[in-house]
Length: 237
Image (tube, rainbow, N blue to C red):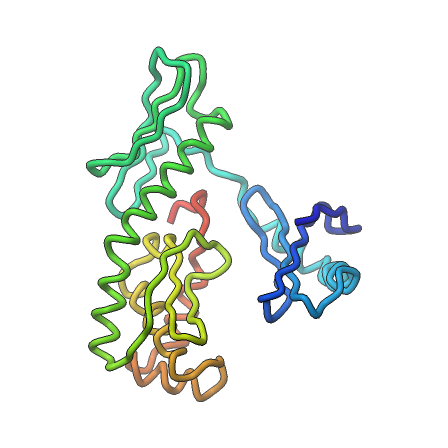
């Protein structure tokens, strides 16, 4: 990955991925810009594309909220876990996820809002989402696939923020741990969306017609509702 200053945009992280099918621009927490470009696109072309999208990127950056501190006074809960901080007479930071608690123990000389404590807290939240995802998602995929009569290869749970899910050409379903932020009906929508790609690989009219048939005719409504959510920890929804 290469960090480059792009005029009118600022610092941009460029990464070439030979498996990528298209060039993508992603805005991540702390207003960081990441660009992934496929092997058939040159680095100079990728930079030129980013320059052409400068106004769009700046608009997205202005909408990107600053990171919200996670503290005991600003309680954060995942689906099944609550984040709790403990200041102790200790030298290091300990993060543990068990019994419905994301426990962050930190030295007395550090505040909850200090960057190292916040990083540890977000690591703990990630661990909780991962635990919940592995407990819930594979079984839900199996349940929905059986109900719809769709055969898939396997399910992989990953820490991805660029997309909620994907389906490979081999019929492997990949899901983000951050699906656990969503209400159940949107989790079901994403799973069925990816299962539908086993039969229809594109997003053209045929796909949406097939997806409508699978979920009862409101695919576009659910897709619009999903846009209210993002796969970042700092967005407390």
